[in-house]
Amino acid sequence: MRLRTAHTMKKVLFTNAEYANSLDQLDKLLQEAEQVPNADHKVLIYQILQHFDSIHREPLSRIFQAVQNYPALKEELVKDPTTSRLLTLYDIIAEEEANGHLDDRTIAFIPEDQVKMLSPQRKKDWLELGDIDSFENQKLYAKNYEKVNFLISRIGADFFAVQNQCDGSFLPIDQGRIEEHLLICPWHGCKYDIRTGLSVNQPDKKLVTFPVQIEEGGLLKVEIAY
Ligand code: FES
Image (cartoon, rainbow, N blue to C red; front, side, top):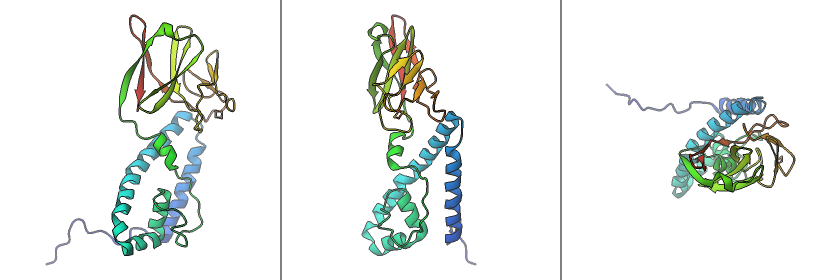
């Protein structure tokens, strides 16, 4: 009697056409996700996608690194329309390298630079920022901790901390201004409620906010996730 191992793999899980159809469905869903009106839900969707991206991108790039010494195998991977598509989506090979083996569809995938910018949060630290009296009212103070750029602002007796980067852009906003509870981006005028991070004039935009705390004696602390 021949025993089958529990790990016998089906040779083909999807045909090329089914794979292509799946890509089309993914693209459609990503475009629909762009239209989600609630900014928190949108952030959540992107965070889930970014975690999926991270857990695939690194091992995939290591696998491809490992096949570099096997030119025939590498060529087979690049020639296959499904693997070449995956390798280009994760920026492991350039589209030109897969030339002739890809169809002409474009997919709204997460660019690598954004993945780096919003890599999974692993740790949280409470950071001491000094005495509250060292912060002037309605001014913006740019700070950095563990590669997280953030802003501190004092409005009356309250303190707020938000990311120092306009949503959807790489531009910092520490040269912006505060009007009442609004933080106004210096570049194109996006207005954020500094208490919630939500934009009041562009509802799909939101800044990450960080918890702040004032210790007895006036020591200001902020909790940074990184
Ligand atoms: S960069 Fe902030 S509104 Fe454009």
